[in-house]
Image (cartoon, rainbow, N blue to C red; front, side, top):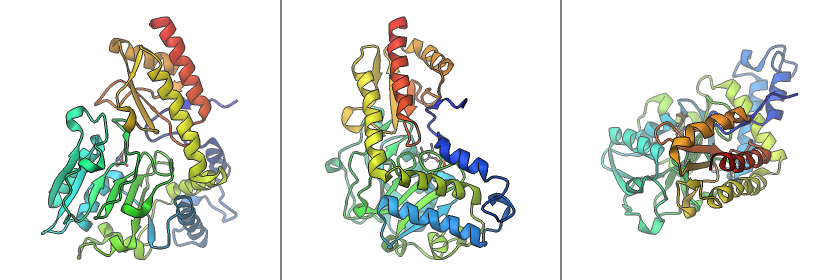
Length: 358
Ligand code: PMP
């Protein structure tokens, strides 16, 4: 039998078991090429096919037109914190940032190294317990872009609507990409580290609209210029992570795409939020109108018991329920590949824990 347990890790995170088994089967010899996928040229026909399929599936799943470039880069989402302003924040210009948690805070810190940035809105004073409504943002009409974080992995909040503004929006969608359909109209760029919903760590997904791409500054260091990668395969890409991403995308497509997974994700998160809301023993950390479908953050009213909860959960096969080290408490990450049964098991465990410790 499988010894795999229910994995609530925030990232690197659970991958579909089917995908892991398929990769296992083809590990020593990939598709009759006489070597593993890790051992072949990134200029080979076999690799071309993998990357093309990954790109086409990404476009299909998100409904991206041919005006969008799908790039597979390195350096993590953290590299994007600097690469975005490097490409799009001109010396005489300014960019707006909406800060809803730890990752947006890191993003603006890097942007400040490049040029002039403004905080258009922030919920820091409320411990990032909500996403400030777009009507309340203090936007600069001359900004080069507005940077947002549509899902804050640590703080557990999520935009409930994709903003459509007068200037292009750039979002860090690391912990929500492909978990829901996106309204693409307002976006110039969407980026995500793969290691939550899309694949293993080691590749960063960058989706960039051609109109936005054309606005970038010149000249730029070759490797950090999005144009380099939009034009051609410039250097050795992370072949193995992209190979895994291609499998995850096909898995999602076979399952019915983002609409299908969105319905499942909504059900999964609703079950958990219902368990939290329906008890005086647990409490959520985010306002109801801003809470995340992907990263459910909660506390025990009696916080001293939290380490016991996390330890007991682990003994019961429920892994990685501890909150981020900077905020404590609990966090259950409910990414696409986490089976609904995992949430049912967690909810049953929570009821039992409350019964024995409440
Ligand atoms: N942004 C968000 C929203 C994240 O969740 C993470 C990783 N947890 C990062 C950025 C940083 O990603 P990476 O480690 O790939 O640089």
